[in-house]
Amino acid sequence: MARILVTGGGGYIGSHACKALVAAGHEPVTFDNFHTGWHDAVQFGPKIAGDLRDSKAIEAALSDVKPEAVLHFAALIEVGASVRDPAGYWDNNFRSAKALFDAMVATDTRKLVFSSTCAVNGDLDGVEIDETSPLNPMSPYGATKAAVEMMLAGYVKAYGLRALTFRYFNVAGADPAAQVGEHHQPETHLIPLVIQAIRGSRSALKVFGDDYPTRDGTCVRDYVHVLDLVNAHVAAIDYLDRDTRVPLLCLGTGRGMTVREIIEAAEAVTGEKVPHDIAPRRPGDPASLVCGSHLARAELGWAPVHSTPEQMIGDAWRWHQRAGYTT
Ligand code: UDP
Image (cartoon, rainbow, N blue to C red):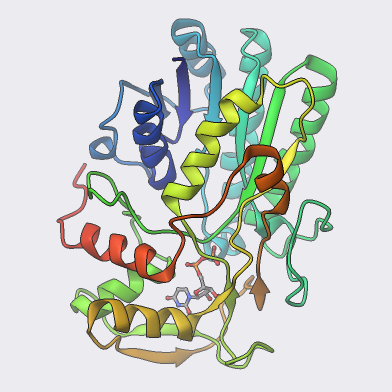
């Protein structure tokens, strides 16, 4: 049993991580500025409202909580928004991470799990991404995450942090009990938008481009169930105690799905039609991102057991029958 500080615990993945930590016998403490996170999402363990860029606030939190490890989820995550506002993304994603890592060094907090993204790799022409893939981010979002990875490598060498970076993206689904789920404001992610289009709570889904060099012309992404992802983070806490370990693991299913295939799966799961139109490409979108997980299997014993389209869309659908968060 260990106390774990979860940055971004009011967000989508962070809130599911807190639930998984409790289930594994740990004590999560959320640290979140609640700009994009939700107070309602913090249902497992206490919360500290604070901004990571406020060095004093994060240092005080680490001194008070004395966590065995930090899970760092807090970040801005929209490719499109990052293209429009790179300054905001660098400030939020890079400066926050630096202040957190500095505070960890200052308080002798050693263990860190960092959520990165396969968007650091950019477009690899459909080749499956793995830990050796070159860094070539196509958006300021991906660039901020790549920069944090590089910063972290230096901190590990110089200051003795024990860190594991996970690269993943296209997280989908929700807690099967629908206690927590995905609620972004504004929502930009495909599966929640597909569900909103079905439910008529927004206009038709816009499919961003159907002229990509993929099997049906729409973008291919590797969708992973949020439960699978957070289980990898829980496993990482013990993994960081091992003497020999790798610094980076990719978490994907190795199976990409196109936007059209997601629409078809949603229609099969819900029995409803997804109203949709073809729209222009979205700036910063690579044609295909598929991420393997061979090393994660070997190192962590991790396998994406919940990441079928049926379970991801089914759990998301159940969650969206609820009203969502309000504060
Ligand atoms: N997408 C789409 N219409 C939307 C939202 C997303 O066609 O309204 C596409 C998007 O271009 C990408 C895929 O769905 O190919 C997944 O996008 P999302 O924003 O969910 O995740 P990202 O890949 O940006 O992390």
